[in-house]
Length: 396
Image (cartoon, rainbow, N blue to C red; front, side, top):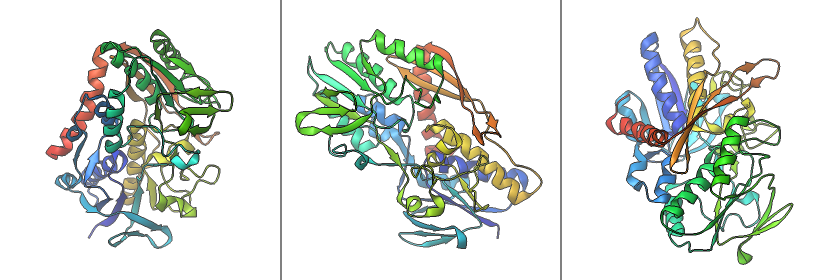
């Protein structure tokens, strides 16, 4: 019987880790028993929820059955993780308890709406399929002369380019339908994709996004620090001003999933929204625990995005295999990582390197703008649909 590897979460990080583990173990001749625990029956591709909200994709195009991972040699258990006991190498689920020799945690992040007053009950978003369908109906109801305000409460959130994609796509969306609406983006960043600490995707990408928003007449308000939302007055209050809106679209503030937040060993003390992690993807205290979720990216100096999650999964799996097989490691995050995003009806591309700085103890993200071309929009969609098509067919 091979060593037991337990993976928590069946999203991008969990699925990537499981595939890489099964393939790597076979190539190295290492006997591993890989089990993935996921509460949902479906493996979703969340970026496609945006297309659902705009009416460009149907709900059925956004997912594939998690059970199809079993065709790749991965055992799949549908259960909801309740607690992790790393000292005893055990995980408690709602249905059963699981022992492991190695653990990979890929639980993503949760939406912490209660971080700001009245943010939970007001506005729309497309971070779940259900909410994307609600947002689609809300977008249909917008009339000429009305204002759409996109609110970003925190500097860190899932998919850093999303708000800029959203406002440019919405501008072109309504223009194509002959509607005159005003669009505003309230952004806590000092510039697009540049945080107050200077970290981000670089000046070239930031400048491009500024130009795209300006060309469409989008009201861009940087350094917007949210105080609260007033649903009755349809108003957003920031530290510097107040803004009226007709339709509010909000970006979720991120936080740790409950099984991690309730375990002090899995809470990053300087910022409890994240987990502690070494640059090799390993837990600082437990050398049999690895991470492959967005909850572990910011402590490494990296923002939240699926391409970076997959990169971390590669690092964690490589080091786990090195420990199981012996003879190689440690491995660090590979680079570069490519990114493709929307700019209205076009697409644009970027390339990010992630060199590790041992003095800083983290990765130093360096990103470059590759250009904007219409085919890149199709490339973005093709990648997401191709990912799901591979799982639907059970192919690698």
